[in-house]
Length: 224
View 1 (cartoon, rainbow, N blue to C red):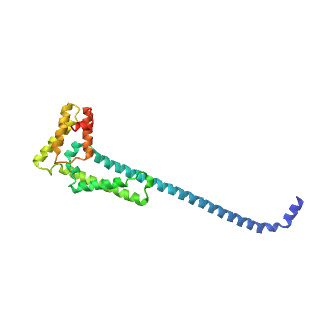
View 2 (view 1 turned 30 degrees about the vertical axis):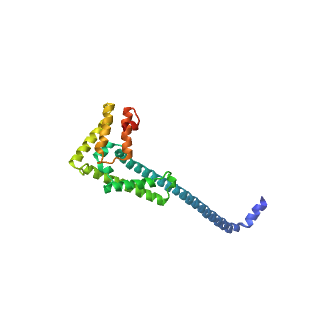
View 3 (view 1 turned 180 degrees about the vertical axis):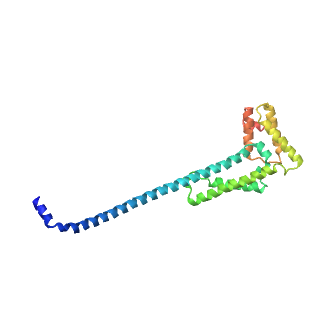
């Protein structure tokens, strides 16, 4: 140990230049460490930023699908209810521009609806968003007009036929009515509506199914 102490005692002045070397090395290591830390932070930020963007995209798609379903459900409330369509006949009148616009908007939104949300590119998502918004607005406008006008586009005699058909449809699906009454009411309702309102196929099928279910027969029997 004494030789070491003798060396240090003789060359104590080396402490000053060596301390500068150590200080410079420490500073360089510190900067390198800081750069590594910054790169890790940046990679972490980019990774989680991508996750956040994807989560936001998925959330928007779910919101659009829910909105699309909501408008379709509101339309089904008419399409599957003959009595409601008789009350608001414009909803199925393809001579009415607002009805045509809403049915076209529905068709476009349904066509753009993704089977799998992963299929939607950014452009396709924008198209689908616009289509759903257009569908919603077009339906609201058509529905508002239908509720405003009701059956005013028909003559007095035609309105009377609509009123009669509305009552007959109610009897046709009334559990308290006899099978014979329901069957007769259904046939008469179809005759009253002939030439006044063209019921969608889905509306007729739904009505026939309800009548047939109460009669304990198939839809073809209800048409007899």
